[in-house]
Length: 224
Length: 251
Image (cartoon, rainbow over all chains, first blue to last red; front, side):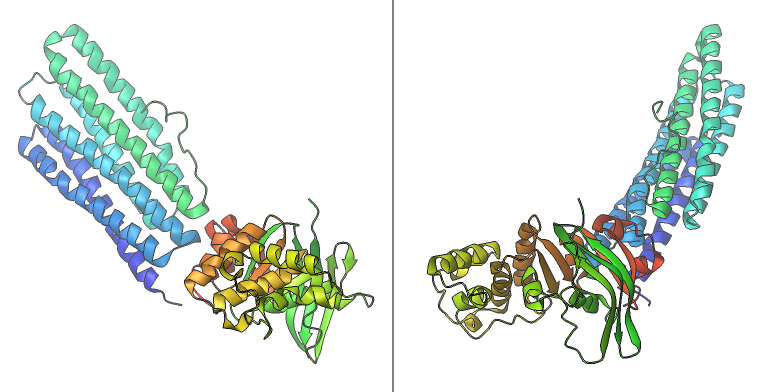
């Protein structure tokens, strides 16, 4: 039996995925702007952040409305709850991308360290890929895929440690890089947090499919 | 806690049509169980088996056992009048007798031969209080029960059941003919009674089932598909049919 609720659910689902794509693109651009020292692109990301926030509010309002009007239960309820929770994770990912854009604007003109920037670029690509794969797991309602993507977060943690070490040793040996390297550490930290948020989205996909609230990377949850 | 009522392989046939297919269920001494399912799924038929209300329907055959307090109610020695005192029933349409409120409530007691006025008065007050209607009718106990609103009539019917001190109260869509405010009053009444009675209610109102019941049983095509804690049923049922029905995909 076709339900009005299904149409609305499809809409909200599509809007959520679309917002996810926006966020993924923003993350990609933020890392690119940082590596390319592209101040304009960074400013664009900062200006665009309000739009992502609006998306979040729209999705939240729509979710509240559907809960009030349809009183969903079981898998219907889990779909709405998943969107309601995961949308906050997406919005926070975009906030970190915006932080990276702010760092881009600040870092301009300071002494730079190309080898660390190369690693940041790799870390950024990895995190963005995780975002996209997690969105794809959401679209397919595939909790096994969500678990697999979340498992990739360990590597992101390793990359963070590596950049951290390199940055600190660079600062020790070349004090003129201190200001720039501090931002490298910050950016690596933002990317690591985005990775943790991707894991959170994965946890909601598991909930969506199984009704169980799980912690996918318990060992790293106390680091972020 | 051992169950007060269990059904074992309970089947019911209307002629050759099997309307209930081997239902195994048990009910604890307290709490509300909601029976849900689409029209014709057998939930009301099942409910009526629990105090032998189907006996009078021509062509009905019942097999299996219904054990109440350790004995099978379908045993030939069962006194059905006594049984229906112990397992009372409230129907969809409020059905007060065309007497006063007072006489409605004491009807069962008078049948049982109680003559003592003090005892009858006490039973009226206690039952009407339990049914959450005492304050509304205490000054007109001798008014005709038919002069009350539908919701009030239904609560008087609940008081009538309570007056004979049953163990189990069966409700067959007891609020579906009532407005939302009256339904709410009945729900509050049931929530108060659930600590002392076994309440089994058939309802088409999913929200009511999820609001007030402790356990929910889903029937489909004469079968018990799933019975579990209400939270489990409404959040994460095991069976796909349950999920589809309570989220409005059929029925």
